[in-house]
Image (cartoon, rainbow, N blue to C red; front, side, top):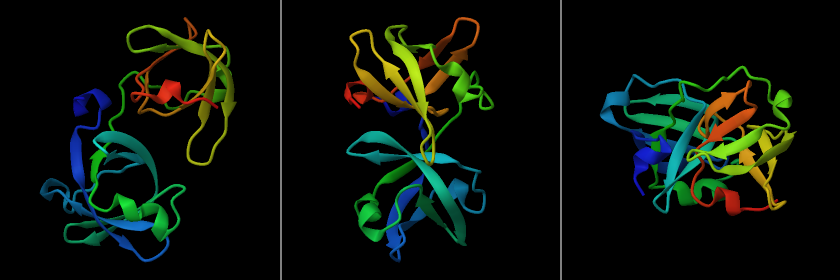
Amino acid sequence: MNPATYRYQTFLGKISKVNGFNGSVSVKLEKSFIENIPAMESVFLEIDGKPVPFFISSSEYAGGDILKLKFEGYNSYEKVFDFVGNKIFLATIHENYIPDHKPVSISGYSVLSQDNNLIGSVTEIIQNPGHDLLKVVSPDKKEILIPYHEDFIIRLDDRGKTILVKLPEGLTEINV
């Protein structure tokens, strides 16, 4: 699958090692990012050739070409050890995303895939550490959890009460 379809085409660097036992990792930065590190809330890790979004709980420039990152929910050596060697890409923001939109007001909105197929209707917003989740019920009554995050939302249309999303392959097959 083409990496550009996931909007993570800007290569930040590669995880070179785990730092200590608290889940912090060292990222060897690409030359263009040395001493020029963008503000980041999330990144994509390439795991088994597929992009997986991670939210950043802390970052610290260690000097030279090293950036120390800690991911939300990953607080131990064991949880991040398998990430060593993985590539990290910057997450990009959709121009139509409305970051200040109040998630509580979107219950009942229809969720559509990027090819305008109905995924389902938002029934609940689940507040989760790191990011909220949309609980969506499909037309065949399956419950699907979708991260309410700028990396997945292409457009939110209040007038039409629709949310257009671009989801990683297989996400809608995961049931609650």
